[in-house]
Image 1 (cartoon, rainbow, N blue to C red):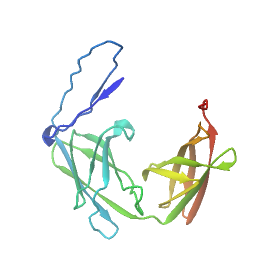
Image 2: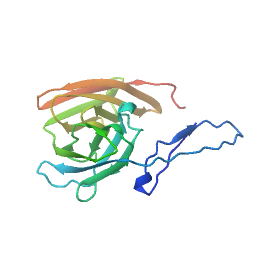
Image 3: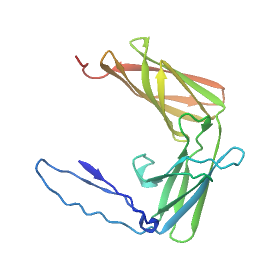
Length: 219
């Protein structure tokens, strides 16, 4: 199965959701893709806690019907003035903005917007330093291990963390974080699919990620 998408340089015709096609061996198929005219417009700003422009922020606009899943929708980066914009179809959308993994700032809560064919919608995201530390350790068979950890929440988006037996990140109060992890231990794959941590108003929280052997080891 191939998933086919495309970009159109003319913003006025920049709406594309792509298509998928299943191709069997020795089969030839023709795929026709329809470009729709963009009739809705959204612009916005990404700022730090003092109101200064924050450039190079990843901003994602996802149709609400996608459930906020990451593969759907459009994405862009804020420019040097912290500005971003989208040309798209009218409808209900989820808007997310995320800084890089090495930033000390925390991602703001996602926003929901309804775009129409008339008028311009605006959105502003403000990023502030985290006040709460979440730390964790990754283990397998009772021993500390190196692993790749994914952490995500509905309010703050997703983080990919490299655990050198331990990991940590900053966040804000009143949220629930979910974790998964994967590691290679002696040529065997170990995984943790999902565990959660409720974060309240304390300054520090910890989570233990105990990975389990998954599948057959390589010889």
